[in-house]
Amino acid sequence: YEEGYDDGSGMIDPNTGMPIAAGADGNKDIESPEVVSKVEKVDGTWTCLVCGYSNSIRMRTLLHVEAKHVQCGGHFCVECSKFCPSKNALNAHVSRYHRKKKIVHFF
Image (cartoon, rainbow, N blue to C red; front, side, top):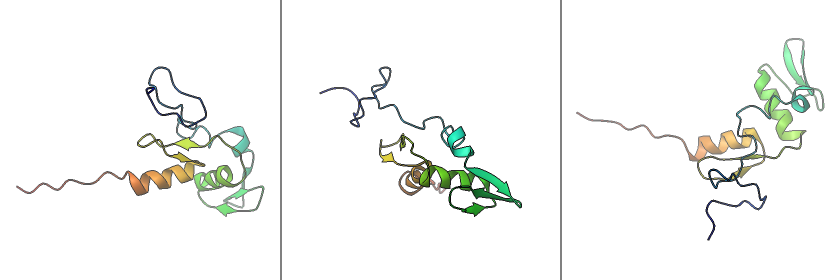
């Protein structure tokens, strides 16, 4: 038995024994030139230059481009190592399955 989890990509961090997570640097993939070049502000709205999707919030348009129009390495959940194909899918997974529960104290 080898330490760590192998996702089949063969990319294991030798320091931690865990898979090297694509997109581990937060919004690094979202702000990549490949993604940003496909977004433009048109009449006050952020627009996808590939398909015309638009949103008043820039990040939502960037997430759309990354999910629909850019091949990326995907992202691994740091809690359970689940692979998610886009940053938006990872955010939804974390929100759905790893939400911190509030502890209510009664005194």
